[in-house]
Amino acid sequence: MTDPFVESPVSHPPFVYSSEVAYGCTFCGECCRERWRVPLDEPTCQSLKQRDWNITALRDRARQDPNFFAESIPTLSTRMAFRNEQGQCILLGQDGLCQAHHHFGAKAKGVVCRLFPYLFVEAPEGIYVGYSFCCRPVRKPQELKTATNILKESVEDTWQEAKNFFPGIHYQKATPRVALGWNIDIPWESYLLLEQGLLTVLSRQGAPFRYLLAAGYYYLNLIGLFLKEFPDRSMEQIHQRVSHFVEAMSKENFERVDRMARRGKARMGLRRYVMSMMLGLHQAGMKARDLRDSGKGRGEISRLSLMRAFFGHFGGRSLGTTLPQELLSEMAGRYLRHVIWRKGLALGSSLYRLGGLCREYAMLLVMFSLIEYYAGVFASGQLGAEEAICEAIRVVERDFVLHAGKDETGPAEQDRDGYDLFLSLFDSLVHSKSFAPSILRL
Image (cartoon, rainbow, N blue to C red; front, side):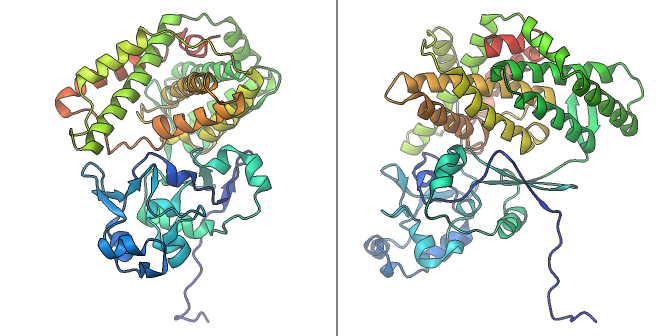
C-alpha cells in the first residue's frame, strides 16, 4: 500500500542533451558583468532585504540602504533590476562569486540568475536541455574541460523552477503543430524529421558553413513547395510526405540542395539592406536604452533615430577584415546548430519572432552574417580571430536572439509603422531566390 504521507516522485519525460554543447558554471563571473538589466522579482527583493549582510563585504552598503542591491527600471516587467555599478552586478564578489549565493545559498539569487543559461523545451519525446551562448563555458568548451571548480546544479530542480515560475525564454513547450510557411502547418513529429535532416545538412564536412547554410535554406523551401502541390493537408498525409521527402533527400546525400546552393546568384544590395536594417534597429535600441538609464528619455525607439541608424549603416563601407573560414565555420556552425537543436526554428529564436520555419531560418542566415560582421569589427581591433568570433557570437546571442530585453525597449506605439515597415520588407524578401546567396555572400 502506498503511504499517503510520502510524496510520489515527479514523473516527466527524460532530459535530452546535445552532443555538441555542454555547460557547467566555472565561476567566471562574466554573466554578472554583462550590460543587461537582470530583472529582480519582488519575492527575491524582500528576501534579500531581510538577509544579514553583516557577514559579507557589502555590510556598509546594506546599513546605509537595505535596498542597496536594487534599482528601479519602469520599463522592465518586474519594475526592478539588480543594481549595476562599474559594469557589473553589485552582488558580484572579487572571487567571481555572487555574494548572495556564497553566503545565503543558491535560492537567495534572483530567479533569472538561477535559471541562466538553461533553455528548456518540453516535448512529448523528452525535455531538451539547451543553453545560451552568452555563457562563457558554453561558448568556450575548452575552458569547461580544464576548469578545476565547477558548480554542482540540479537540472531537474532548475527545470521545475523554469516551468513553474519563469515560462518564456527559459521554459517553452513544444506545440502539436509547427508553422512551416505558405500557410502550411506540420505535426511535431514531422518537424523532428525535418530538423534531423537539416542538422545533417549543416554537420557535413568539406564545405564552408555558409554553403551548408544556403543548402539548408533550399532544403526547407523545397519541402514547402512539395507540400503545396497536394490539396489534402491532413496531418497524417503531411507526415507521410515529409517522411518521404527527408528519406529521398538523404538517399541522394542532399545533392539537389547542394547544387542549388552552388548556382545561387547574389544581389549585394539585398544584403546591404538587410544588414543595415538589423544594425540600425540595434543601434536605435541601444540609444533608447541609454536615454532610459540616464533618465533623459522614455527608452523607446523613435522613427527618426531608427531611420538615421539605418541610413548610417546603409551608406557606410563594409569592413575588409578577412577571417579564417574554417574557424568561422567551426564556431558559428556549432552555435547555429545548437539554436536549431534547442528548437529555435520551431518555437521562434529571433527577437522579431517572424513565425514559420522558413522565415526563422532566413533570420538564422542573418545571424551568421552578423557574427561575421561583428567578428570583423573585433578582429580589426586587438582581438585575435578565435576570440573575435567568440565575442561576436556572444553579441549576436545577447542583442539579436535571446537576451535583447524585449520588454525594455521598443518602438513607441505612434512610431511602430516605421519599425514594422522594415520587418514587412524583410518578410517579403525571405522567399526571394537570391536571398540566401546575397545574405551569405556566396
